[in-house]
Image (cartoon, rainbow, N blue to C red):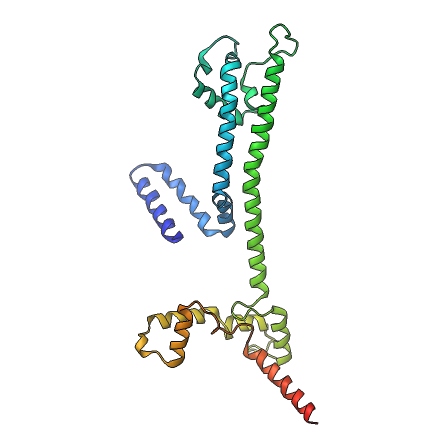
Length: 276
């Protein structure tokens, strides 16, 4: 599905570019997302917690609506830099738009409003505006935005941890048999396994790439699917049933010939000692 979406997106961008919508050429650079697993994790950090982000955004919009309503009824004239009764916030939905834009202001919504003199005791406006501006800055510009960023950062951290754990697992555990790398290397050393050039071989690499190559098993599964069931042999019939039942007991789990040889040899030695 991802490959289809990728190709479809590239075709749409190219077609729009051909029809003289030139800025679509720039979207082709986003193909680098599909080329890097780390960049895909960055995108997933936003798409995976999309539900939590949507609910949090809805809560933030409700809070900004409340601040816009307060501004509409009590601080409407402060939306005019000159302090007169200009029509910058003469309708509630206009005040909501200003409240949303206040998120990107340096001092929150108060940074876009008319300044109030702390010494102006005649109009008694400073206390209300101070509480209004400070609460908007703390609740919306600071807490709300940090909650959104925290959800994204936490998800990215979890994805990165999962990716690191997966890489560590496949680096130290064989893919098919699920055997430890140190065990396989130790067994290969005791068995004196060597390359065709006579060099010592890594038991882990030898098992993964030669004796239990995962693509050989995949090729066998596809072979079973493509073969006419009438021509199945007895073992192929049994294995195809296990494959259809998603039963992996036919795979050499926690076993390999190299390890079995050592176990059989140790059993024979133990049996000889018992006889003597």
